[in-house]
View 1: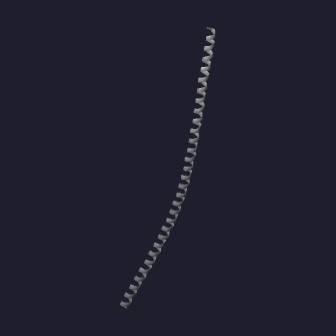
View 2: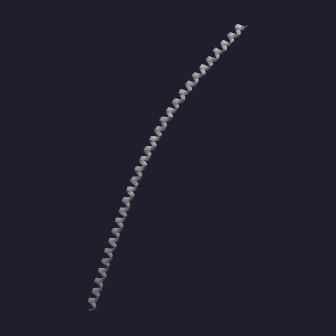
View 3: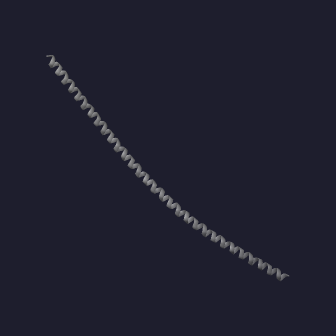
Length: 111
């Protein structure tokens, strides 16, 4: 009878340990599943972030290209305006010379 009780205690303890081990294994699997789900969500978020950064980079590159084109166009306009101003300056100088010569001729005619 003592042996039977001891055997029952040992079997009961073994079953309890087995139940506890199964419970621990289930909890570990649940945690692992949660961790894997978290990892998937993180990876998807990182992928979305990388895609957004890639789009932002493309937009920035496009802006730089537009700025360079506008800058180049702006420089061309400045050169054209400088040429017009220079031409006008030459025209003004020529007009001043003509006016001075005409004025001098009138003065010479008076004298």
